[in-house]
Length: 98
Image (cartoon, rainbow, N blue to C red):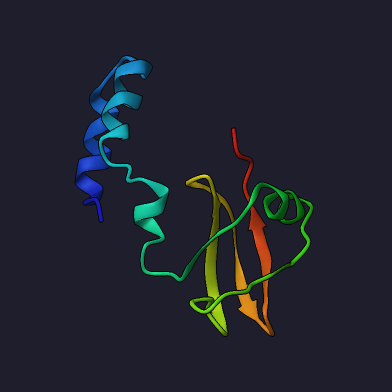
């Protein structure tokens, strides 16, 4: 959490570039922000299905059985946030990977 006073103080920086650089110091990595949620790693093929808004089958001994919130990554990059149920990961929000 960032105190509001710290954010308001950034208004005093006149240069947009310097203000944005100072704001970057308050940001955390997406993976760290989602670290309290169950995570699955997916293949490129599964990532393509998720990008299209389609569910994928979740298999394996360590696969979560049912979770109302979880996230999926492909090659370490966030691809989707969704839910796991009935052996599937169902995307709710899909993110572009670059």
